[in-house]
Image 1 (tube, helix red, strand yellow):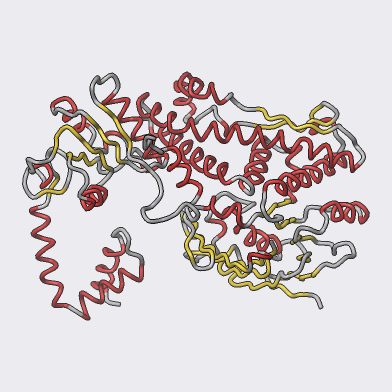
Image 2 (cartoon, chains in turn purple, red):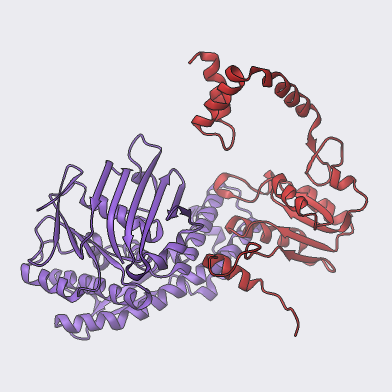
Length: 353
Length: 200
């Protein structure tokens, strides 16, 4: 799959943008705050109508506008061309593929896969459990439609339960009803996360071998509460949940450990090792996505190499290979190679000739 | 725009399904383009406001204490179908297949929107289950989280331990006349879960 053209209207601070991306490797180059990431974010909506930066719709719609519109043209190789139109308005995400409305975002996932590498990813190692969950959610939403569906249902149910707890009218019968509705998506979310981490582990070891720190990195899922004990945890936690006005147990409290040489990477790996570990995780994520997707996912890499030296940057891009289209952003020009470079300044996109 | 026109537009804008432009179009249509339509509309609205009320038994729209379904002696009181709102009831009625009676909740449990059991037509459902010869309760609520939770609540609060009453949920699956290829994964999953034995 290849993105050939992205148009965005009233998206973030872009009133209008129309950018030709039709090349195997595209690099959006420019200082920070000029609109590089906004365009990448708009392109990433094709996979699951989700932004890789925020969960709410509101920040995506330009201030004072009712809706944001994004239109992405794609080249699907043997299957021809497709056009995905996304409309984001307060509380609603809608999409059309070649003019036909799409019933649910999960439908898009297998058709238009993308993999996002994000500059925030260093928080994967050092950040809070929330950073790791978000990374895993995004990685899985891009490959598993069932996960996306379960995650949405669980999140909605969790918001309902928390609203009920805050209302001060959370009687047992209503809590019980919600907890029953939550149980199935919660189990789905937990199982998919554990499976994905188990899938990622060998890829991560493979990549680490390549980078020269062999066999050192491990991933383990740490569920807040095992799925088969969730119902009981929710039931017995109701009294305290009412006091704290929040649901204290469930997959929304899960975490996973990144171990380096058998110990927590956040405290036992050097800063340089942590950076490389994050890149290794990105590559592992890509290899897993490759195995699951019918068509090679497009890589959206948001300033992922930061201040890495020239040699390491070159090694990273060569590890990705040339089966995927890459759309990357950065403040420094990419290492030599066949990049289509687009200079970004003040929300305007100028191809370098 | 005149202040009076603006007021009408604002009030129309507050109605469900009407955005800024459609509200303006309606206001213009009724006040300027076709003012002759206004008097009959106002009259009908006034008459309906006086006449239409909730059926005392099931919550459906009615112009007498009992709605047309409840007043129909051919309807089977042993089968009770619980629906979320009046449009859902009307949709089921249009199929002409269901011959039992209904119970309209006028909403579903939605803590996010501040809708609890007290806001729904549930107390009357309890009374009906206690006094009417109901052999089957059909829960015809949506299959999203709030629909699920409402079904669980009704089962636990009104039907738990009730011997001899069958509780069913409507099936969720493929639209009629369509194949499997174009169905989304969620619908296919529901239809697989709701498969039934056809013998053989």
